[in-house]
Image (cartoon, protein in one colour):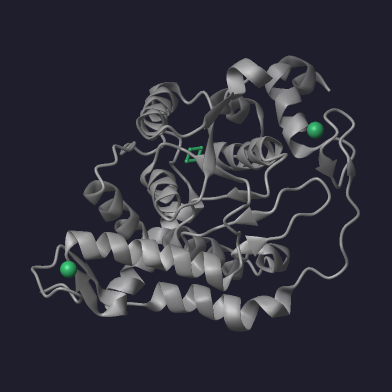
Length: 302
Ligand code: FES
Ligand code: ZN
Ligand code: ZN
């Protein structure tokens, strides 16, 4: 197959676009997809202060590269979750990436700053590691984004389509109402944007390789049982038979489905008694997890 643009030999084929590209034009194609997403959903402008959540994986590092290539000034925040070597290696790769490009990186260390790790928290809660991890990340990223105009997330097309499928399978209407390319800021919660949603996972990997980005290739060791990953595998089977189905599913939802699930009455948000962050309860979910992880015995007795 030849590159759609220059007719040289293609390096990457994108079946859902019925197109193939040489390395240079593939990189341009991905950058254009991201620029178009930022523009179409009015995610941010050139003067906005942006904070990107970086994990050391291909998606977030590729997105950092793309955004700086497009001329945006973006700081990064890395969350050290205390997941053994996986966390330490991802941190080294993220620091290297930032240092080589002279980008500002902030590191939040869960064990050092909050006194517990994700494996510790998972062992003391009646919930999966991924759910504790997910709620901790949301909390810490939101906290880090104070003073920024937007918190930028590296979710790709596969992540978002699988999340949507998971929410549809359970008819989780509240989550469906909140699944959008842009989540506006509300009382104490940062504006969240996802510029990578038009780019598939294998494309962010190809982009990272072609751009010479060294990223963490290992999966999180606590991934066993992760529902989103299982749904991603299922969707990839559908995609192999019908190229474009993931994109149609996700963008069809944004265009024609999402409006039906808009969150109606805003739930009253109060302040967490312990940390002051917005919550619907008395103490926020993160503080409850931290309490149980740092005082496991007291909880067991109560
Ligand atoms: Fe779920 Fe790492 S904790 S993938
Ligand atoms: Zn080309
Ligand atoms: Zn709290």
